[in-house]
Image 1 (spheres, helix red, strand yellow):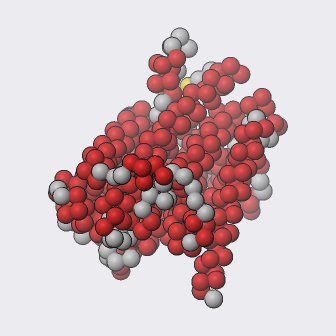
Image 2 (cartoon, one colour):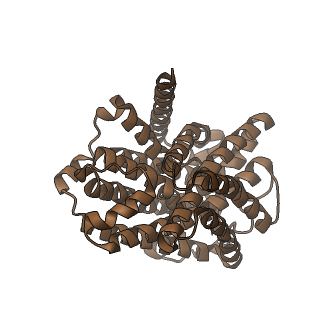
Image 3 (cartoon, one colour):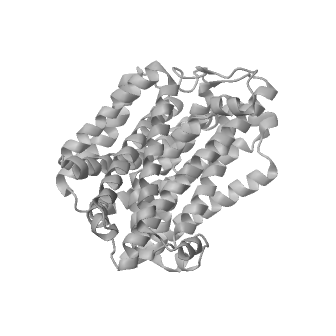
Length: 433
């Protein structure tokens, strides 16, 4: 086992005074959950939510709700693993598996991060194009500047990075709250959308988008990220101290992920109210921006949409860059200078995004965004299964091993994810044959 600490430059840098009361201590622990939550409201979510809302109305709200509950469960396991063992998920995999298996898991995770970053970079570039008419290729390159911001913020304090992320989440939520008020969705139909129906499984197109929503909501690299950044808190490394840290970290991530639920649901609701109700199928973010103003009767709607998209893309690239760093260090034990490590991680996403933007422009970007989320969903079992195995292993976790009911829910979640992926692959294969 390596002695290296996860995200060593930020590990245990935020002190948690023991004399604080419940609410002040909760505030001190709050932050990592929001860094995780931004990955659940990135431009990939926008593509799938817009497609789902404009094509099928409010029906897929149930998928967003179920996906969010799965995310809450899995992220709580990440917090448990990181705090109880002092290892992030990538390090735990390297400790447990042989080198070939660890390298395979690393490659799979890098594919997932690249797919995610591709969506975020393209989403940010589209937002810059909508707001300032900057060509997509130039917009993609500009998104690379986030690496400078990450370097600056983490050099000063991890708390500064958390503050920026929370501020952007509030901006995104505020923009969509106004858009929901303007869209005036029918409350009865909206609430009915949270009840699952068998049509989702019977309709291949609906299932494809549903799995895209699942992939966009429960993100593989977020599992690695969360298991690391919960260790930025300097809690007592005693049985009582770790138990308290797990409790507060779970509250933090649960509350944060509820904000992601609101934003994802709001995107789909706005799409259903503005587009589906008028028979308009919107499968491009740019097209959604173009149609929002005339359909909702104000140009403010389009501006808020683009501002929220830009905030979402930049927020997600910040945390995606950190996740890439954690995965590279954990699986490969490669110790590079933070600025170089983050530059490499960023380049992996920007290079293919520039190529796609140059060759396809606005055409096909929506399909690419949805496809990227389906790829994320296909990678999920490779992160979820080890996470459940490790947190359910008393030899690794000791007294903090997951209770039987948590393990049962976690394995049920894993089975659902794998079953949906098998169904998706079958539909794709039979469609081509």
